[in-house]
Image (cartoon, rainbow over all chains, first blue to last red; front, top):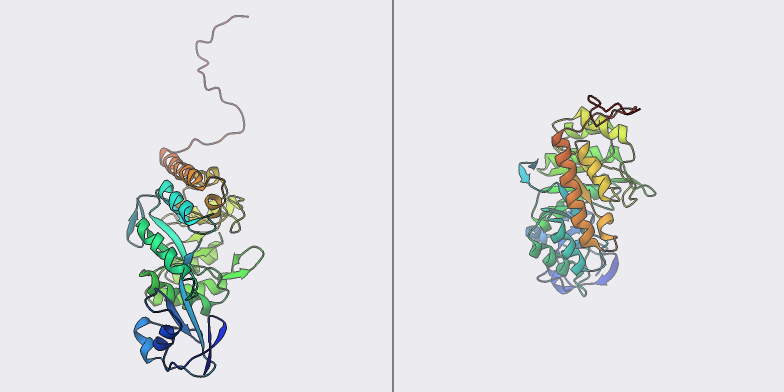
Length: 65
Length: 257
């Protein structure tokens, strides 16, 4: 199925958010995630099911003022 | 000592981490400023570049506290979600809450700010709202659960100093017990010293240091200015007057006409 990852369409076979993060190369990184605009805590990623057209945001620490 | 949400801080200067020419210059500036708190943000991470991972390891090595912001958020929902994500990533309930209302001045949307502050404070966040000098908004932010206010000096990145001196003085006088941190618009160390002389509790600087020709040197200059302004406030500045008052005693002046 197709999902949006940080604004780009990607194909995935992952059923849940944790699997999608692994598939897209975020394993071992310090990131925070949101699904369709709602925060998904680390502990809930594995039980957060993905559906066609879902939008994931994967954010990391960055410079800020 | 500055006390914000129960945390004692020796340094009354807070430093942003953005717009430095390189990570090495950022590190040098943070060290030269002797700050205990730096602001950070969250952005989309590319799994290939992993830029955020590198940045985060630099900040952790500095051993400073982080104050994550919600920069770039224009709605309550964006700001609240960003704050939730920041709390998890940075492991702190501190949040510098920005809800931007207008892009030319980056002026806060104070209506959204108050609403987001209420939601976040109820959820256990310790909110540092980026606000204006408006007293009514300040009252509402405090009622929403904020225990610190961060009024702007001037628009973010403008370097104009304290734009509305009378408004800022009124804010200080109206909330003598609330930690007030001047956030945004400071351009040179004299602006920071002025803020401290007026009785503000701390100053947050980013662009003025990051965009200086020598950021580390400017960071050190700001540290001294903040310290000098704070000391001056405690020392009790004289009252200004309109006419001269001789500083050399007039008694005993020689008659030599």
